[in-house]
Image (cartoon, rainbow, N blue to C red):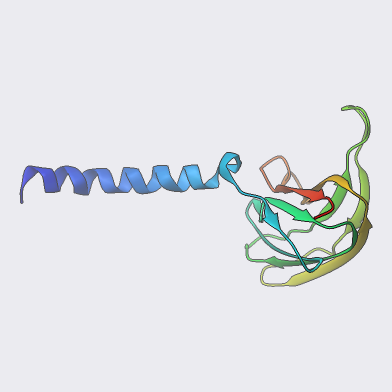
Length: 136
């Protein structure tokens, strides 16, 4: 086998792992625009997908499917005016076990909200998303 082919075969796993790590970073995620007021979320270890969502103000329905192995939930929070202020919980789904789908509804005004999993330390491990409520 030619030397170039061996180099490629050795480098391929490294490239695949590097690509997977970069894909998991939140920096390059696009904002998904929801048009029907139903947030269809996928939960797993330790992500909420999509990570950035824009919706119109009003009644929002959350439909979250747990594609992971651990239990997860979704809480809609609005941060207080200061960084030290505790977030205000506006809505919460039930706990979803592996393979389950849970729902919640909430009326939201224009602003920026956070979707988080409040089970154990899942939020600290990266299981959160940003919800932009704005006129579209």
